[in-house]
Amino acid sequence: MTTAIDDVFVEDKDIVVGTDSRGHSMTVFILSERLTQLDVHDILEDAQHGDYEYVAELLTTGFRGYGVMSPGELWSEWKESEEKFYRLFDEDAFPFGFDGDPAHG
Image 1 (cartoon, helix red, strand yellow):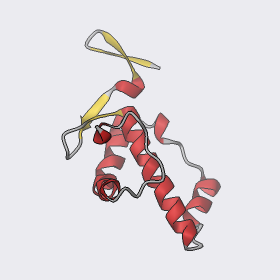
Image 2 (cartoon, one colour):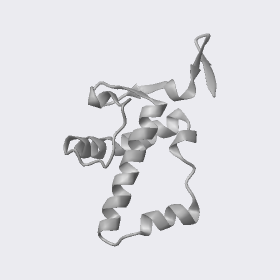
Image 3 (cartoon, one colour):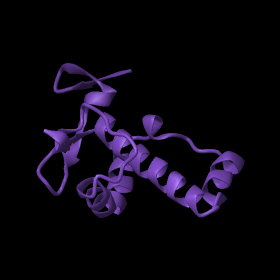
Image 4 (cartoon, one colour):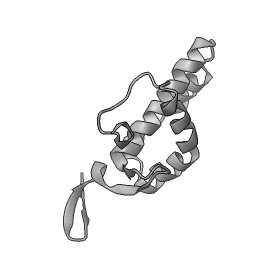
């Protein structure tokens, strides 16, 4: 899907939502990928301790998905998670990364 911004069409995933605490421009795509990394980390960590409550909740009540959230919703989720993200990032604790994250550059 595309959105018109200042008479230019921009793919929704490329909309810059804000700047993180380390000065990186945060697009819709980057926010959704980082939040997904956090969720996967938490799910795997919980599973190591036999805790499946979060996964069960997701499967029972459903999850809309970061890819369909508005930029404002993503930004709110990010601001609640940024400190944890960078702590885990600095510890190299994520089970996977993605090439488009400016934090890797």
